[in-house]
Length: 417
Image (cartoon, rainbow, N blue to C red):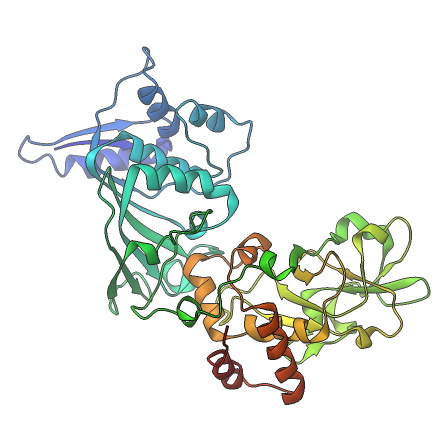
């Protein structure tokens, strides 16, 4: 056996050498330590650089790569483009290069963040991997805080096993609470449950149970927001850019400014004195383009806390809560559902909120996003009931008043086309 080990930190190289020496007890083991940048070494080898040492094709690659964004004009980004790899993070660069350097049938195992599974920035990376390798196995830790208790981890990490040039078949998905694996559970899923055949973004889903989610099974839930004539946007008010126009409390010439902290399961509380955020923004020619007319909107928080039960939490903006205010400001940590930057019919806004607050939607979203962030791009690719069905759902919610989670989840099962 021959091992190529890459380590940039000189302080660790001595310890690495001692570790590799332990395996050389019969003279049948060679350990090569490369104290250099793996990205540049792999790119030089792949591109046939005459001045670089050629690297053998690997039968096995084991990676715990660094996690750091790559700037578009950085040396790493330019080097990767030489071999047809377009990606935005060091970890995905390492995985892509490992796949490119692997022998046919070679196995690649990496522990990496789940952020590559969704989002537009990782689309080229997903294309690169899916065209060159088969996904064999994915392992998910149910608890970020237990498996990675020493790190400030804002998203779930995944262990993935790929086979270079492999024939794609069913994918094994396993879960455990933490890195002790004492409660390991494993299921096998057809590949069309991992990457949906009709998904242009090629999101990678990680289902955690053999049963299909209600969202996947319901024939009534098959429309995109574009089909419904609804748009979702990140809140346009970035507070530090409009700092001079912000006010702690409403006053003459101001309109409401809404943050996630203004919303709870019972609705909006505005103004809020104890929130340590401004409650108002001056309405002027300088701020008007960042504001929406007062009306009914559905909003979803963009961020959840690490171990929060729900990833998606939706609320309804009711115009009556803001008196005669002509405009509303939505801060950047909210996603806003609207019709061409105007409000929605009340029943539609309420129907959207009910649907988004179902347990099934939350579970479905977690299958392709392990991040604490809910991006507008991800929401645009979700499937929804028809506009009429959402309106009916909203009318039902208006008649019911306060709703329990059980009522919301039960109602989802009554939707028809």
